[in-house]
Length: 130
Image (cartoon, rainbow, N blue to C red; front, side, top):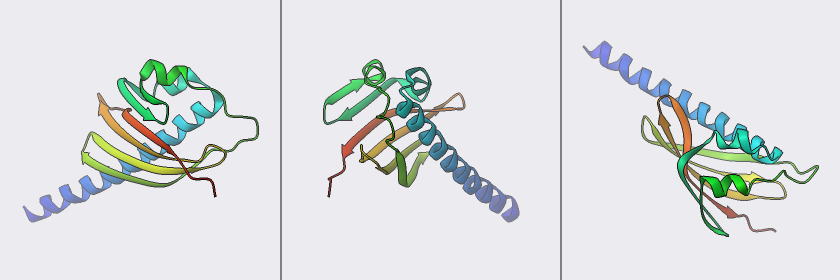
């Protein structure tokens, strides 16, 4: 019984690490789609009932998608300092910062439904320019 319990704990820890890596990869793909101005690709990462909050106000999914525009030529977007906390196996809170012309801090709530992760809530705060 102890061996089975230890194996279950090890499997859960591995699944969590795998999910964390998967979410970071998804976030980077989402950022790449937004940077290219690819609304169709970006929409796949955003849940239908998603809400976004930024310095311009609150937005639903359709408003979030409508705001997507390609990044200026030569501007590099780099997300760094990822932290992912799982509230349960299908809900995670992610934070990270970004480097580049649109440097900001992000907070995303990811939810997994039918095996697919999507953002259900997101907020960005502009980073202070030094």
